[in-house]
Length: 239
Image 1 (cartoon, rainbow, N blue to C red):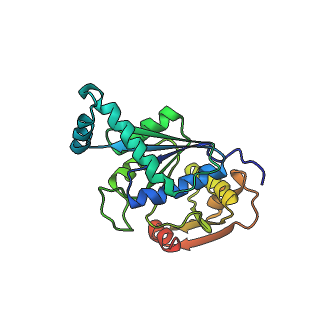
Image 2: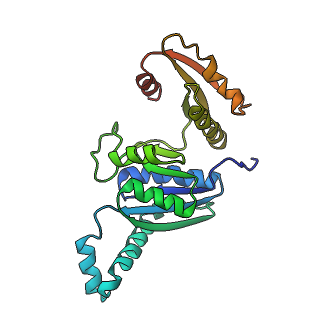
Image 3: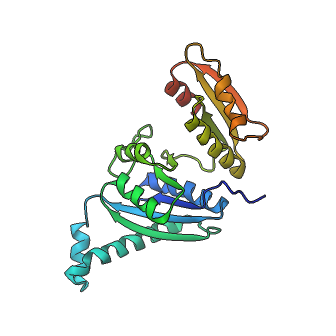
């Protein structure tokens, strides 16, 4: 295949060792591999260093002033070990990072520090309920605050996908999202469906014009117009 200039070359994965973050890891690894780019794995310590880990490090002879650095190294090593179950071959470089603070702000800072082009996270983390329909508070805040694309992976999602649904409302934001969806669809060999949910007198023409306005010459993109409440229609079609 021809090399893509639009695929993400630097991807940040938020990893908290949960089942959901392992699913997100599969997606991040696949995208980094397809884009022949770099993957940065970031674990956030929201509650500081675990007291048990602190005591273990002190017993091992780590000086009190160096406990924080040693703890970060230990956690990065643990993340490396946890991700060994995933095949990272074909990725240019994989790095591991540990930050302190709230999940959303720490990941945004990490993304800025490494100049990431995409953040990949699980829908829920280890401190959130295990409902497959839920999006955790940290993930919600991250999406709201991020100025770069955020890919949220639901627990037990299959990746790479066979099909991708792109919801269009005629806005520039949905047009830019469409650009990424089409690119990812091409790279992963996934079928793309463009959906406009009609409200009132909307005819969908403006929304589908984005397919041309944002440079899509991709053959085989399906177009669908549905009526109803947008989030309900989108959710029903995405099942």
